[in-house]
Image 1: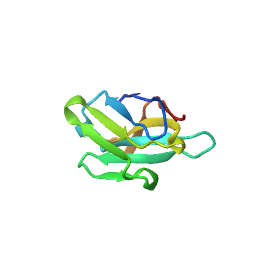
Image 2: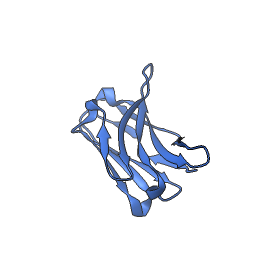
Image 3: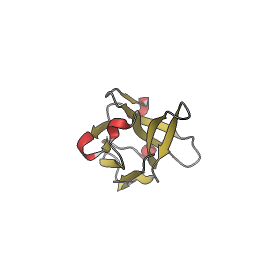
Image 4: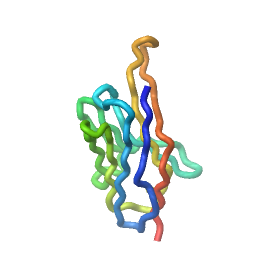
Length: 121
């Protein structure tokens, strides 16, 4: 199991930047993949960015070139640097982690509590 705690959300003007942090309660070396989901009111949850334990990274098309996901293994923390923010980026952002469950022979998903990001003038 793992606990994930996000921080760094808030209110920012269009064009501004925010950095989200996700601190894990265990070494992230043991976590198969980590990432960030977001959900805006009335919309489906979408995977914004994720990074594997091997370092491979993927982004949803709408944030490519603006968002950067990274990890600090020493701090057991994953970051999402968000630049050139747009009003349509407004959502609750949740940290996600995926760990292999050897007993059940499947991946288990874990979630943080979520942090609100609001982009508005």
